[in-house]
Length: 206
DNA sequence: GCGTCGATGGCA
DNA sequence: GCCATCGACGCG
Image (cartoon, rainbow, N blue to C red; front, side, top):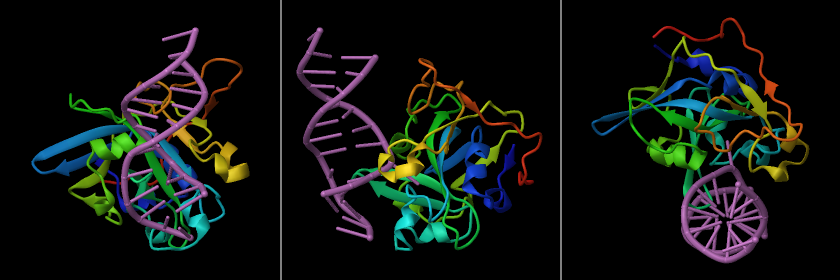
């Protein structure tokens, strides 16, 4: 198991989001270690992306997205849910990946099948906004044996984003039972399978 | 199983 | 006034 290092995150969100499927979140809180396998993500690809918070400009809330990749961007939505994102891309190019769902590991039982539930279950709050994912309290691992199929769909809950609402920027492991929504098999809805690369760039040594 | 609705607070 | 959500409720 390799700890993901900073260069792994320093790529466009549209590449980082699928690369994060199957990766393991490690969260140490008090005496416990919580681990969970990411099964669903969304890419927010920059200031021109009308669904991206940074499309409204550089503000206190969005400041972290303008910084270096590999930091947590955590914000409050609907007055009660924290959303856990990972900053992607280059400095001054505000991109991020929302972590939407995960499967708890090690027999730990929790419902992480949605971004609000995931942050709550992993005890990730705005207190973690801006932290680098290289500290021993919160980081990610790669399991090189875990390379699931990846499907792309439109993002959830951004119907206001005009032409951006139909972009295939949500990525998921279709075999998972912990998705925020069940896969739609009916009607003619096609699966948009993301091509698998032989080797991922930026998976670094521990 | 589905659609609808309210909670709740930060933000522009 | 809106919002990258969730869970409760009413249906029939």
